[in-house]
Length: 71
Image (tube, rainbow, N blue to C red; front, side, top):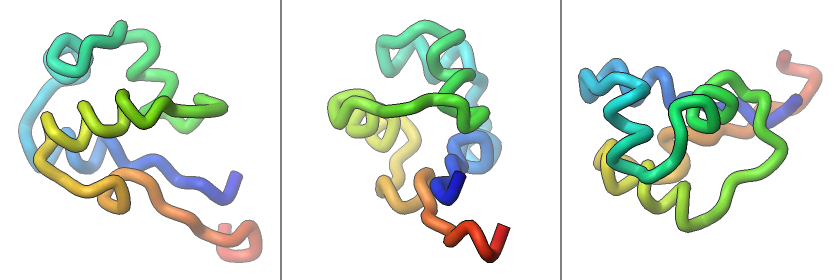
């Protein structure tokens, strides 16, 4: 997939655990794990907004596009 999810990188930079972020964002740790591992098919803008708020970052810090040829 050409969309790369870098939530784990931002979580490490902010020193926040998956469980803690999930609680702050208001989603289950399992759903956040699916998103973090790049297995999610979609993300709600409200969830993206909450993640960015809690990680103090921009959407482009956690979602990246790389053409298939670069992968």
